[in-house]
Image (cartoon, rainbow, N blue to C red):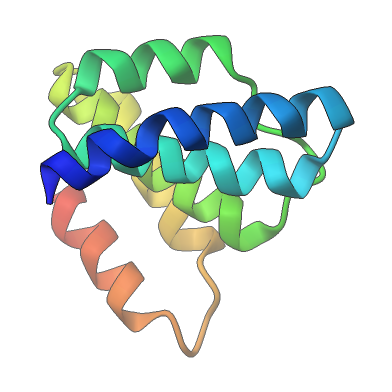
Length: 114
């Protein structure tokens, strides 16, 4: 599974660059979240942190993508031992999560926050 993640990463980076050039906010948000998830799955927390510093999350992205981004940033901050920032990001993700049908996501966020 990790080997497959390594194979997909260059394609995701290329698509992300294309979305940035074309000013496709939704594509940027989705691909940024996919890249962060890819890095976290491969335990590449430093690369995920570097990507999050260099790539700004688009303001016009959907609420669901923003929730995922906050969750991934909370995980990154927690591994860097910045617990107060991690907690803030995770609680923001829990508050912004869709109410009524995102039980698994909300449970996962609260589990990580504790």
